[in-house]
Length: 563
Image (cartoon, rainbow, N blue to C red; front, side):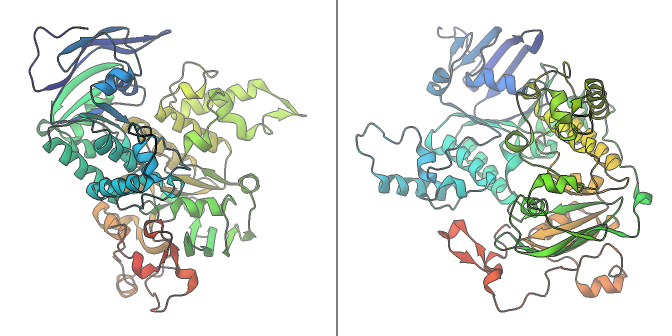
């Protein structure tokens, strides 16, 4: 390690020269050269498995390269360590928030350095400092609240604030941090990034959302098959050019949605009436026909996941009825729901969906072992055939069926989950953000499979982190706001801008204009629009508010809180 004789320029924050990383039988990175300048937001994008995570590991000192050179603050390194990276003020915020749930917001914010060389910790002072930092960042939280009470979005933003304002990093790597943020918290994140760059600090911003990269970044580098394909200034890019660079095909365009509306029957197949869980959602009324895919659009915290979990019996339900094919049902567990043909694809693939050390084949078939067995003995031939069908249908990139699923990229893990659900042949499929954190090609493959795989003798309810995915695949979209369905859009009404406005609580349709337009009598109409809210507030209308020291607020108080 020695001072670089010839600096590439004082404006460089980081320079990588011919970085290669070899694993057993795999080239993860091949001759990657990259320059990141001070005060810029440098975007990284590529398909799942392209090498982004390995590259981030090299920069943060978690992964030693096999060859190549790193230039940092005028010094040359063959490899970094986490200690060296920290000494050079490099911090990383990962996609999955790493927090201590039973500790407070303040303790998480300053961990592990809140001792500060003192033998006695002044907890009051720590809390005050945390409150000041959170306020400066624009996130209003009680510093003494336990992190277990925070949403995933708030936890993620807390770690961003820690890296930027507590660790005072000069180069911050944000590894798909926006994937789990609500729109409100995204706005806070973007303002933090603008503030950092004004101060001359540098951000490496990784995202699968091409629109977001073009809005946030100054430069975008595309990684494909372990190589840095090209670094391009934002003003020289558009969505089509960027998509073509990512997939390696200048003519790439996402597949047009096949119109499968002819498969939708006229009879009600699945319905909820008065579905209520106090503090989470209330009076949910909806009906879905066989062959129909219905989207539920809502901000984080609107109750999307909670409704799905209550349907399958994973979370409590206070009142309401559920019917499938005319039969009233109520479940005490997800296994009971699955036996009746109602299957849930969780948004938490790492924590709840996959068994990391099990093979791809085992993860694909674990829910249908009874179907693959005779007299209690598993037919390994049928198990292999089933896994092969799913791998081919969803284009899952694997070395072999016996490869551990934890070794796959995020997009391929998600495909395994979708494949498992498809093999269960559900009557009702509840898909909770099936495309979160996957690249554009994997997303296209998953949406295509959902559109074709969950219609015959079945129906699907789907949520998504982006309205564009719902527009591509759904026959209808319901708007969920503060735990209530407040509006509905049929396919001929789809507009990304209008649906986003509705998600903020703005009522786009009124009963009068629906009737005037002739849209109030169709089978798609929901029973509960939430537009006739009485002025009085019953106890059941109150929603717990962790932002207000555990007090409750009425719906009227919550109006606009997510905007």
